[in-house]
Image (tube, rainbow, N blue to C red):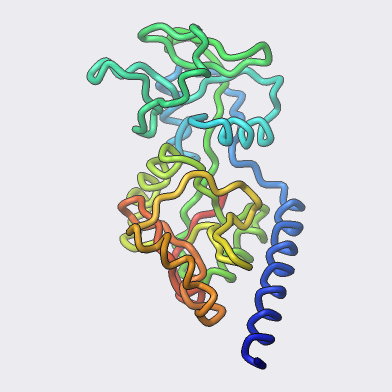
Length: 255
């Protein structure tokens, strides 16, 4: 009986803690996407984003579109990362993921055109037009910290532990991890609190990439675990998710 009361108290405290984490996150001034005003052709814009950020911004889902619109000044016009891959005859994001968000095109794109965000809607322009551009703004931090220490580090820099909203974002971050020379898993903003997995910045958990199908079943057993055991989420170099001990010291992603 006493054990059940203690467990109930712990879960209520977890929910309170998560609400506080979300409130703290809402005070952050970070932006997952940034606008670069320099006018460049598409290929040079992509190279700039890859050197200074992650890659040109992608909008692969309605949720990504929502986050993008919350991050940037929508009065700006600039390149996004969508292009026609002549080798596969498919629309693809510059990070490598296939384009699946078909209702976004609306007839604006033709082969050899690239996608532009503008205040009047999406446009398709030839790749050597000179435009500003949008970059995905995530960073792999090479220091090893516990999940809570990583969260404090990101928020201290005006960011947050990163949420990964789609396969496209996951592919981009994998590339960033490889370029950073990191060989093991890295902390993300995934946290099990109360009774479910959530992104600590409040983004909905729509895209999932757990390492094994058992992880989804393991979620039902989380209530029997001690507070720190496998209640924090990490991204592997292969692009899958793992639930790990929050006290482990890993590198991490801010953004």
